[in-house]
Image 1 (spheres, one colour):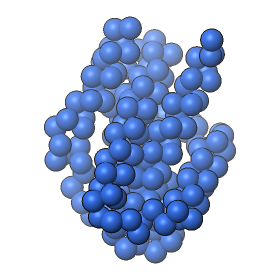
Image 2 (image 1 turned 90 degrees about the horizontal axis):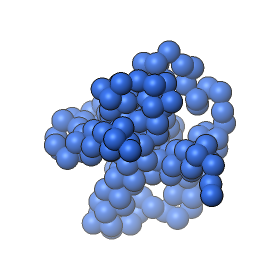
Image 3 (image 1 turned 180 degrees about the horizontal axis):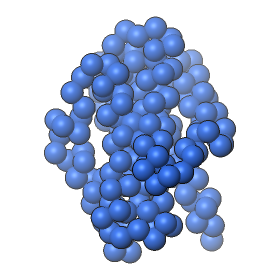
Image 4 (image 1 turned 60 degrees about the vertical axis):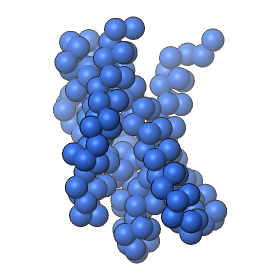
Length: 170
């Protein structure tokens, strides 16, 4: 059986990859230069976790461990080598939705787990799940001058809340 720390790390890597791809695609869609694409991908991938850690008074993990940085770097290189940004619009839309959904689910779980580890009440656990899951996407959308998805799609935030609640109940 896998150790819960290993499972937590795997889920975190999945979320990081998914949101890095999401930021990469948005950056290219908005015709940003390479630095802009990297910044959007980086903040999409780690922004929610940084917000969560700031809320609970922790130094953000991105400042203590290089795992997320390497994950984002490798993801961006693979995305660029595969010319992900040049696929047809319909294919890119599907990739974006899949990446965002994976990141949302993964980071909802990791955020909720942080709340459970800190022995927070149900509201605290759900709040950390929500912030971790949607924080990076909010930063991404604000950076590229779009209304954040969380304000345009009811289901997006609801999923984060439900996953946080589910983890509380389990």
